[in-house]
Amino acid sequence: MEEALPAILNVRHLNHYFGEGDARNQVLFDNCLQVSRGEFVVMTGPSGSGKTTLLTLIGALRSLQSGHIDVLGHDLAKLPASELVSVRRKIGFIFQAHNLFDSLSAIENVMLAMEVGDLPRYEMRDAAAAILDRLGLGHRHNYKPRSLSGGQRQRVAVARALVNRPRLVLADEPTAALDRDSAQIVSGLLKELTAEHGCTVIMVTHDTRLIELADRVVNMVDGAIKSDVVLNEAVVICEFLRRLPLFEKLSPVDLTNVASKMKGVAYNASDVVLREGDSGEDFFLIREGRVGIYQAGNGEEAVAMLGSGECFGEQALITDRPRNATVIAQERLVAYRLAKDDFRAAVDASPSFREQLYKIYFQRQ
Ligand SMILES: Nc1ncnc2c1ncn2[C@@H]1O[C@H](COP(=O)(O)OP(=O)(O)OP(=O)(O)O)[C@@H](O)[C@H]1O
Image 1 (cartoon, rainbow, N blue to C red):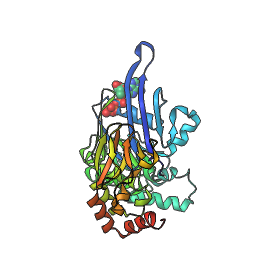
Image 2 (image 1 turned 90 degrees about the vertical axis):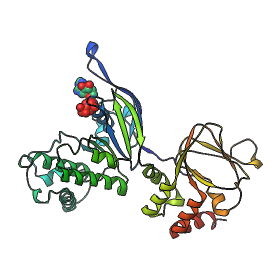
Image 3 (image 1 turned 180 degrees about the vertical axis):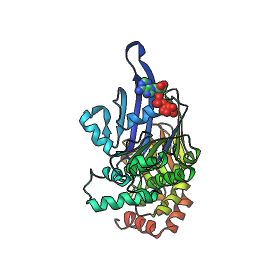
Image 4 (image 1 turned 60 degrees about the vertical axis):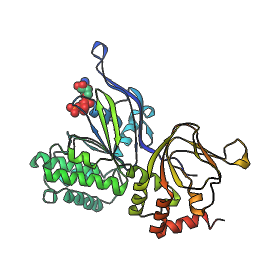
């Protein structure tokens, strides 16, 4: 059975206050947010709505006062202050105060981010040079920050944040100081990290070019998340699918094709999703919630329970036999559904998918 897809970030009931006594001022109100691997999340909202405060709490740059934050598998409320540093090291920060070291050149500033790893120095230099070149700073490797323009310093900070390909990037207005072309290069690099390397990006921005790249837009007003809109479900679905043995050999292109054909469906607790004996018309992948699998020969007890990231319904599509079990939602269920024809089309289009199917479902029998 598959393990559930872990969230990169899980924020629950987060409140935050500044000041003390009479001056105590609540700036975040009961915020909940779950972000998966590979998502590109843009946070928008009016000035003072709490976006930066939320981002700094997620990045363990500020102490948690009330609520829970689980980031990259660490429960921030339970970590001693000394271990928060190791969480921060796993995150790529792009903040406006970029804190470059004045005594170091651009390339040395970027290499500094790699010193926690065990790469030989020449490889660090090559990786730092490559990302600076990519960001249009090929001719500025050996310049000290004070000899660079504001936009160039910002790009060195971007290079430093991304050179290790962190699993999570937190960015606050990363393109604010950049001209149009540089902004495009930075946004392209961030998109590539999410799409090709499964990095997760959470970014505060008002830049519409960046919002266009987002998979999801979270809007904050007066310290609370007012809307959370998923624009590109396919990215989320791909990340779910690639963890299933059935889909793991699919190329990124084939995977995206399958994901783009899947439609979100919701069920209430006790709804029957599939019935034993019916013909198989769809394949399901669970996004949230749990289902019980029941078989007539096995009484009232469920023969299995499936949760987030697990799939069901493929067997009848592969074998063309009737459903061999009834599937019932145990709580509110959000699932992605792929129709039989699209499932078959995906199988036909991909020799590796077909091979994987036969390996899993037929060779064992
Ligand atoms: N260090 C601080 N001490 C006291 N109040 C603060 C502090 N930092 C932020 N605030 C207040 O917290 C609220 C949220 O600020 P925050 O910077 O998180 O908002 P924001 O949405 O990021 O705004 P902007 O888009 O202008 O950066 C604001 O009312 C701000 O004045």
